Image (tube, rainbow, N blue to C red):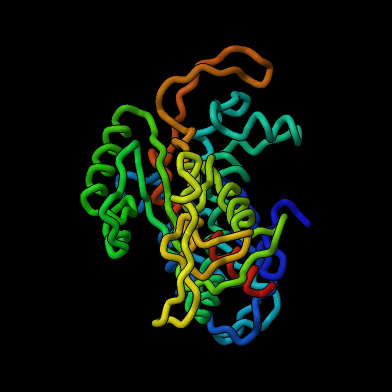
Length: 351
């Protein structure tokens, strides 16, 4: 299977580069007669597109999606769905001086070492723009999940050490950082604006909650549900860490604290757990509780401060990155993380 393809039953293959003609995705395994409108996909793409606020890159892309195949008269045909978005606001000249210079934190060095060639314009295939295909596919996955009464909620939990504490999911789309805490959101926004003025960038933490997932998704040993979720999340550009449930905090707990006690819920008439330190997964299989995981998002590599590096010949250089870049990637990673989570859950539902 291609390294550009993800999933088994519900498979996606993304294509395109940051400054190429277009980006998009081919989705295979979608059942027929599923009602999908172009607006269903566009809504999700609008959530990840650039230029949404003063704290995101000002690259002016509308990211309007085109359906090339697989959908006829508003319904899926059961054949591969191809979704495409044209790149219209590239400024490749911003990268001319960086053609042979290795940008700190970027994939240029490793791509050159592996392939002997690298599209340096905006990061090429390693750019976050590749995630357009993921979000478009995730929009299709969310329609399937909605039919199964499964909901995915993502939000920015932390930026530069500022944490969301009073969680209210209704606040997520009401602020530019997509934070579920309105008070913390204002502090995050202020901090990011300060970082922009200093020519730097900042990282954070994104949390994703999957509600309504049935018991029994996932397989033992190598195909554990959390393993597939981890791979999906760590494949997202700028994500450097993954934890589920209590995560790394569990290393500080006793077994008597961490074990989720079982009980019979008379209201739902099923076995549940009183706590959810496991994050909704035991032995690689979903428990029916909320699946909760977090992503560590690094600071964006492209910053407007001078940095020391070398060129492809090893000659010392000083560079300052021009162009339009995100000072904090968390707000735009939220819809990408939701999309990848949706793709994983739909794939397991089909399996």
